[in-house]
Amino acid sequence: MLTPVLAQLTQGITPEKIALTFAVGSACALFPIFGTTTLLCTAAAIVLKLNQPLIQVLNQLLLAAYFPVMYLCIRFGETLLGAPRVSFDIARMNDLFWHAPREFLQQFGATALHAVLAWCLLAPVFGAAIYFATLPLLRRFAQRKSIPT
Image (cartoon, rainbow, N blue to C red):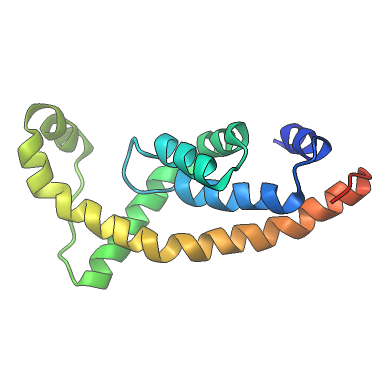
């Protein structure tokens, strides 16, 4: 991942813009509705004029963290709203999704909303942490490579 970042720095993209790409991309890549993160990352990159390839690479790299974070968002959202815990049976959920979508939405629609609520609360904090953690590193990296910032 370091080579594309160096390439961006040498092409005039500021450490601040790359740190913002990391922050927004990380938050969007962990949005808890499966199958939406690529579109969310694309939209965020267009609106904020962020580096599209970099944000998509980040989206793919965070796939390993996606399901644990989704689960945590669901549980956090349930806790925030005092909702009963939903049992997860992936095979059953998959079967319902493809064969009875209305029933799937009835059973798991509220769960998705719980997860989105939790993500809405956590994503700004997480994004800010990523931004402020990566910015000094990127600035130092740019200085070592004698790249104007």
